[in-house]
Amino acid sequence: MNDIFFDLETQKSFQEVGGRENIKLLRVSVAVTFSTATNAFQSYTEKEVAALVADLQAADRVIGFNLLNFDYQVLKAYTAERLNDLKTLDLLDDLYNKLGFRVGLDALASATLGAQKSADGLAAIRWFREGKLEQLIAYCRDDVSLTKQLFEFGRDNGYVMYPDRFRRTQKVNVAWK
Image (cartoon, rainbow, N blue to C red; front, side, top):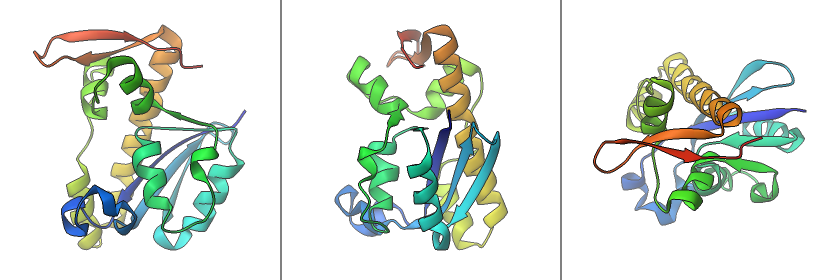
């Protein structure tokens, strides 16, 4: 079985492209995958998006956080492939369907794993513009790693934790296999 954990960063912000309806204009800065078949991370630049798409298509399953409504939508600017048809486990989508609201990766990782994201998407855009490619890839790799750890915790324990609007830690059951 080859599960691929996946995340990407963009060159632009929603504000710069006129809002969420122009998601295809964000452009890929870098993407990172982790393959359970090779037990290794792989990074991709915008020039390597075709290889990224091929790797995603070759996976038995793609796992990520907000893949359906963000990462796949950004990639649509580069490919005619129907990415939403890939066997995908989008942790955010699954949790939204259970909770009725969105919870960020940082909040879930903090409540469940006691870990935090190393930065945010706006810092990633700044690093791209400053040419700090290694720092950008490291940040994206950290997000892939957090997503993988969160998935594994949920798979092994049948739940993950999140802070509610009153900052109380709550449990939500998951059936991630």
